[in-house]
Length: 468
Ligand code: BG6
Image 1: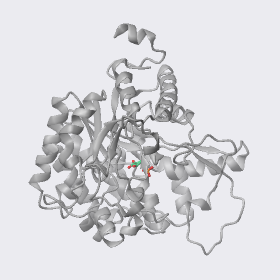
Image 2 (image 1 turned 180 degrees about the vertical axis):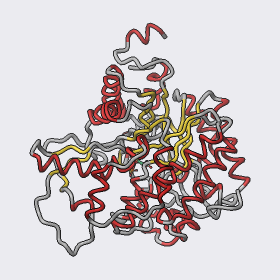
Image 3 (image 1 turned 45 degrees about the vertical axis):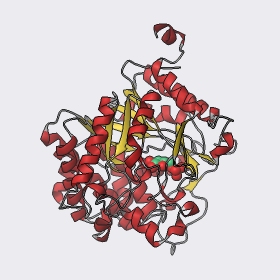
Image 4 (image 1 turned 30 degrees about the vertical axis):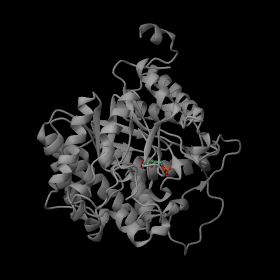
């Protein structure tokens, strides 16, 4: 092994967290089984199945709920030393609060124990876009009472699993439900309402701080953080108007969660922006103390692509709904590198810029890359005669990002690990199985058969040699 490490150009620190991320709704399946209540995805699929790519819904995911033993062995085979999954709120609490579903506790206990038996550290996230329907009917994140129900769910998870789980996360990408559910209409309740979006964001921040307090109060000896998709906002040019546009996008989409989560306060400039348009959320005086006093121990950073913006060129129609695009226009940079199989920009240096930002402006808090991945449409076309996907493009994608992470590490960034999105091909919200991301393929037509991709073997070698 030491010769292997010597040969490597990019060697990572000892005990680096290598693994992958997932979420309950995207991989468990059995969305109505064993007492699980409906969440917004189950409900929406039942009501409007045609919204979902090829009509495939959350009842038809990769079936981790029953295939988890095989899957955890595959994690081991692909070198994982850690794995992030989420606990389905509506499996734990079918009605969102009140009676706990013992079968859910048993299921997650088995998952945690099986991971540990295989020397894979469980990283557990609480909320990954999956509001229980009963809570959505109460207003979802718009409603203060749902914040309390979330804290009850979080505390129950800490009590039942906190003796073995040492890394907890309150939310995955909390800006996504704000954007997709309340601004751009992609996720349920599919609204376009800036005022509600701000309230949802505020309550998500508050819920996170309250869960952090509940966790710390229990003194379980682990750490709790949040997972944010910190998307660097790059201006078209250094012209002051472009710089101002980029700063506004950064305030809305990144600093709205990053600052309160790590520093305990919202940026003054963001507050001014919202106040100016009369969009400040409703809150109680004590909320700001709770947020200030309960910041994260560690930070997960999801990175896929940057956001490129320019100063507004056309005056917005004053009668159109108020959108973040009142503050900037999107900029389609000529010559940008694009993932030809998903359409997203590939800009590897973005991950370095984020890590440097955290190092320089957020006290170099302990962090890790909690998602990074390359989605590919119709990936079967890259299957070889033995049924293995030859995903060299994905290996290149990972290595090119890891080089920048390595550089940040060398310059003192406090980055502890790298999790790819994702372990095995999974169902993804409205896109269902359109974009495949896994280290392992899943054949929906053939009893969900799992086959390790070329990138899965590459990942194993990466972990074994702690670099490449
Ligand atoms: C991340 C989410 O932002 O992007 C995942 O945390 C999601 O839940 C992933 O699956 C990829 O998105 P998509 O739409 O390409 O499947």
